[in-house]
Length: 461
Image (cartoon, rainbow, N blue to C red; front, side, top):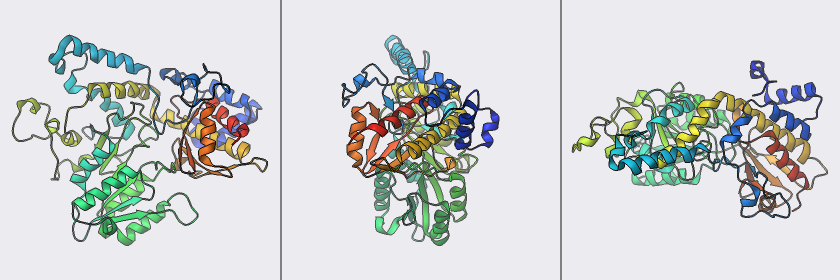
């Protein structure tokens, strides 16, 4: 992560690293100077310059009497919408120029022919997902892709028809589950199998998932969980859950909306059957931008039902306009329609930055950022003298979470606290009594975290 944190840091916990740096520099972890030194020693700090950080003066709910309108906002909401890479405009302009100068010829000529506009994104996505050749396809958006994957991979029978998923799954995922179940003639009450945390716990234990599979796995057609849970920020043990579920004959899919670009993934090695993801959160491609799928190579030769479209053809036969599809290999065979050149441009712009930074380097910084945030919350906010407290829903173990921490606010109304933070130039989001906070290693600094907690200390609700 930094000049003071070499390969030896890999053997230490993030809190160990913070403690050692505090001792080395003779500076308190809770001090502003410590945040400044962390930033000075951050080898990834220049990545922030690759993104547009909204200025306080441009935000709609800011009380301008509290802030300097020209200063950067404290943007801790990349789990909801990533910031715009500065390279986006250049890449879009290139494709717009090709369109203007070439018209229809731009499909097969120009800087990046339109028919292949998604292909420059594939190599970096393969790295981020831990995928092999032909296992990644760029298409549609998240819920649409869930439906298309379930057409092929949710094939209920009279003995095996249930879908195992987690409590508080993103609502759109559950809508998809319910509608697919009903389409196949079952009722959600029959077919939905929800795994919950234990009483008085916030996150789901891996052993409880495995035990439920032991008890009911023979009736489960599909296990479909979130790689990183959107509400709590919990990172599930994808490898262990996948392996165990498959031992009981289940197909296993993952929603990676909050995982891709957030944590390193090894989907091929973990033998994941399929996965879906969006690209506008940690991948910074813009609101509603194109999503994608992963299909393991061990599924390529199996006969599954498909909902086909012309873009699922092999590249060589797509424009022959044959009446029967010659489906492309692997994930490409699931594609339906041609992808947008504009959306692929924004995605490609962000992926260039990921390629230069390296997901392992980003993960190292992310663990430190999030641990630093948690440390400041415990030592600066959760003190007897403070008029409200924060209960962190997210696991304490850095290996069981990504960038996000989910705060349950105790003692004051979470929405009112959120509103006051907005007025002070902080960008977050709130779900009921929970505020979600995510310092993103691509563009957030340790000073962002320090400034955020400093505001929490003085803000009045």
